Picture 1 (tube, rainbow, N blue to C red):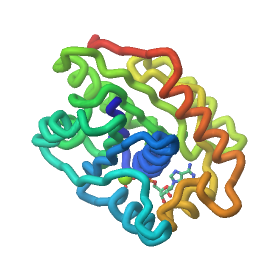
Picture 2 (cartoon, protein in one colour):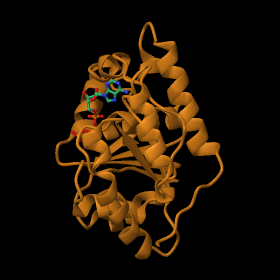
Picture 3 (tube, rainbow, N blue to C red):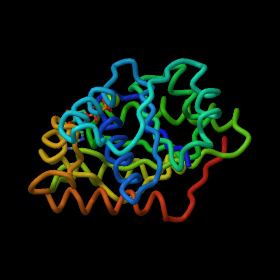
Length: 222
Ligand SMILES: Nc1ncnc2c1ncn2[C@@H]1O[C@H](COP(=O)(O)OP(=O)(O)OP(=O)(O)O)[C@@H](O)[C@H]1O
Ligand SMILES: [Mg+2]
């Protein structure tokens, strides 16, 4: 299965979720490829810290691929891996579109903030164009990231997302917790910390279990 972390708002959590999904998928010995399709190189930096912290045992393979060629390169490399996770930059780029064409599932973290919600019309437009140019429909899931622990802001954004069928909203929020940047700074995921944040671990597990085992939510072009 090929997963792409997508979206056109910077800082929504694509890299954080890419790192967690990659490590989560690899936990039972699966061969996982993490594709860094963002020139910023965040998941490459994460992996470099991980190599340092875990003395080389990162548990997955990292490759940097950007531009229109990404599609062909991922198609060629696909048979060697059980899962592929592609991290994209927060803009409508050639790399992000190539990743959305080659992927099976798009995962879209959305922060419950007005500036993020304002990007949703452009995002759905991009996804419509992608769906129209694919042979099989792309499965799309959006979910809240950096959600407030208790706040009506979450509810308003969740309600807005739920009305956009093409964004396949999942009611599994990832909350705003220090555990995420703290783990990321070491090249680790929340469950790998010496004293793991149990709530962070549980919400990650619930989201990924739903995405990997849940019912299929397919969208087609309007
Ligand atoms: N659930 C969370 N709780 C707290 N901090 C978070 C959470 N998710 C991400 N962050 C932090 O928010 C910042 C942005 O996250 P991240 O780099 O994953 O976003 P991005 O969408 O990949 O950004 P970019 O547009 O730069 O690629 C990072 O400092 C990260 O540690
Ligand atoms: Mg990023």
